[in-house]
Image 1 (cartoon, rainbow, N blue to C red):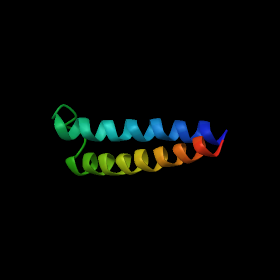
Image 2 (tube, rainbow, N blue to C red; image 1 turned 60 degrees about the horizontal axis):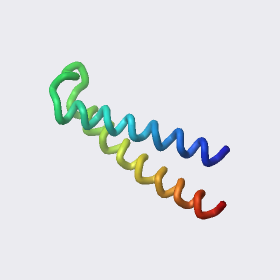
Image 3 (cartoon, one colour; image 1 turned 45 degrees about the vertical axis):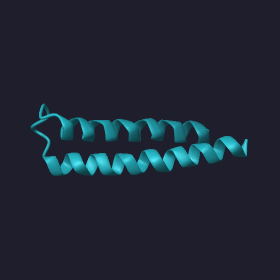
Length: 62
């Protein structure tokens, strides 16, 4: 159960990071302010790193 939750959170963080980077690199989502895009990219990146570390720890624990 804990491994599944960590995997779901990892995918969600990756999606948040992707949306933020998509807005930064393209101008197609002009309704989203640039500050919010940087915030999404930064927090998504932190989430991806933290959840991948947690997933590795869980993988080696089993």
